[in-house]
Length: 247
Image (cartoon, rainbow, N blue to C red; front, side):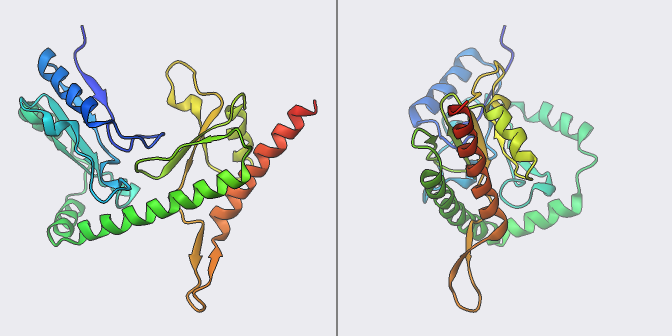
């Protein structure tokens, strides 16, 4: 018997897709129908590329069966390790668990973050971050479209900071190893499957801008690190395909 369920519903990793409203309504209805806790893991919720965030499944949860949680580690800094949770009808067991396991969390940092939110600065930061990520995703995607084989399928995410790429019949597991030898960090698709699928897929992080405006001339120039790494990644892929086709 199923005791609980876990879903990511908005700007999910690694595809960046968001579930349609109808599917989120269905999830809320199923949680109420079977009366089991449903964890809605929404760590990328605030990083949508649209002007307004998509509503979570929690919005249609009338009986409190959905435990909605998110993170500031994705929107501010990975090292924060702070998040938030609306546990619904499970508030008391949630608080009991938190008291038992929450000793290592920095109370001072929590207080600073609360003040940052209350002043409205966090909201301004989110608006700016969403715009920047949208621009960076388009930068990376345009570069990949121009430099990868024509049969490559590149995601067009609703939000987040990653792209999901499929090159049919390509060994992405080996690509991850080859990329690591040049200091390039990607994730092969097999990492995202419990059934050893997606061997011809991989994920790249677009959190760093490919180019920037020079402070003296306002000229748009390539940002050396990320641009060189992405260019090197495309070279590895294209050279591998050429080598395999001639073998």
